[in-house]
Image (cartoon, rainbow, N blue to C red; front, side, top):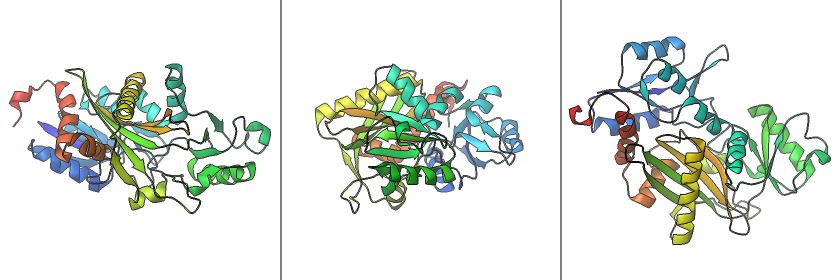
Length: 328
């Protein structure tokens, strides 16, 4: 079986994905415990993707959602490999839109009856006047489509319109002309890893609690600096009732979004202890030893890193024409 891990030069990408070479090498090492023909392809052009197609891999293990061409166009990898009839890991193109667009995901899940924080979409034309802010302070501002804490810092939590404008301007300048402002949730923070075994229709669901350090104002904000420095604490969820609730919400979100294979659902409590959907990460980080997805499965389900990768690839194998028994 030939497996190619597909990534891109992503130092400027702010979205989800584990495309950095360190993570790809860890995935490659894990896969090579079981398969002989595993390689990494870093793509920056359409021709790079054509070369992968010419190699006729059995599975493309997608480390990022798309590649950004120099002319500004994006090639979504799931759509590309579906069109050339190559099996790929993860969700399809239309589903990955919910990963890229936080508001679109929240709108869908609200319609499905899943609780999420009140929010408004903020654009340069509708944020200068206080009357345009239709939900009460405190609010939490973040980019529409960034991940890994990008754009989130102590200034993301705002208590008045002056600070709202200040933070919104910074986000506009770096992340584009759409910002999401949510009602601030002051409760505990969780993330839940989900792996779906399609053949058996079974889920492995692993929730953990994330506890960022307190800032100078005694507030815990899980932002870019905290994530980069790995200063947050990751803990198992020991309360059976909360654990069951988190697992049920995560699976409900996964199903409602139409996700496939694997993903990570972020959940936060409000000050009354009610759980709210925050966002979905459908190409979650895979850095060995630190990324929340494999760490959740390690902490909660006692799965080793290579076992997590095995579970992900098994679904893709089930979609190939090669029987598992023939794999070296």
